[in-house]
Length: 180
Image (cartoon, rainbow, N blue to C red):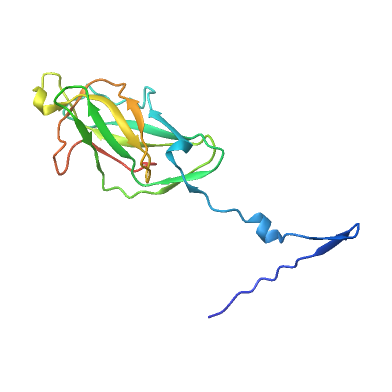
């Protein structure tokens, strides 16, 4: 096994009778790698631009909603994995639906101050005429950033209803990793 040895010269500067040690350039240049983003570092919301709105009137076919995270802290941080998403229903019979994850592989996203990333939620809308017990009417989303325990509460701004498949193995409504 070869060992690569780097020699760092540390110079002492004598000024006015006192010695001051210089910091090696390699130590000054190296910064700690960014750590993960915490809920307190972020703000979140639904993407509501015309091109980002889910087509909730497109019944029987999937559509997507997007939730964004913006780094509001003064440091660079990373996100990797899936957010936790619990939909809270507007109907008395809806309850809370914890969304399952897609099979997509997460990547690590680095967010500088003010940077934004998002993730998508695939939704399977149904017609208003669908029997109440077969539909879920979203009211709010409890969104927890990856590897965190505190969540954001986001009001569902798009209306419509989703085919209720909260007990299905492969539901038509599920979430994708952050950054995808």
